[in-house]
Length: 351
Image 1: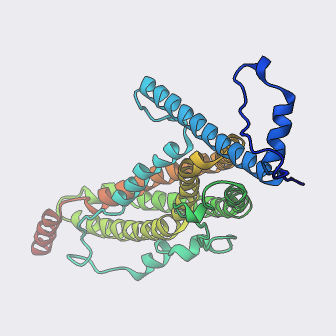
Image 2: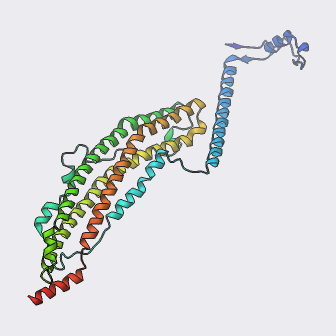
């Protein structure tokens, strides 16, 4: 409803007195009669003023929170929280590097120098990655995690319902799709790794048993003992070479191109969402700020057991890989090739 002034009643200017006792009710009535007043416009003006005041208040609250956080970090000496989920996952970098290092072993062997390759041994010790994933569900390890972009436009503009709605959608996808993907992939990785480690352990035991007591006695015979030694070392070196090739297949297929990209994207999505919230936080109301902060807390709560389980599995793989790599290095370097060749030549001359 609008109130219109009645023109022509009075041309006198109305001056409101500073002192309450000098202010008369007639003055207010006269003012309203002489000035057109729109209640609708007044209401809108008040809403605008209120909205700006709330935004300014939210901005000040955000600034205060930021200052307090900085002070707390200064007290801690900017030390990263070891219990932070993202910090925990970063420990996998060193584990992955250890796996890469264990895959780069190069040791000379006697195959090709003295002895020919035995195809029979290859059929026993060389299986390939498909052997370990056969019959395992979700062993394709297709990464479908989509990391949200980092810009104002992508996260819904300057606050409001659209922004909070987008963060809610990110969390829903994270919880229902991404978490399920990682969980299923971890189960598959666990099953594959268990089969691989069990099979490899048996093969390493077989290779070790090739050097039995009878072999030791025969190899100790002067000159003539060099022949059975060469045969034994040849078989061991071929067998461990195939085991080591399987180890490389396993790491490349199921870790570097398998579970690790999925786990990395999963954690990166949390980190990027936190960055997005930090970016848009100044434009959010205090209530919305609490809401999106809770979303991050829920994402980390959901992810923690899966990330910790992955780190545990990866650590186990690293330990097993170190055994395989060390066995490969030790066996392929068993006996100096040049000295074996000299002994073999001597044996042939004497014979």
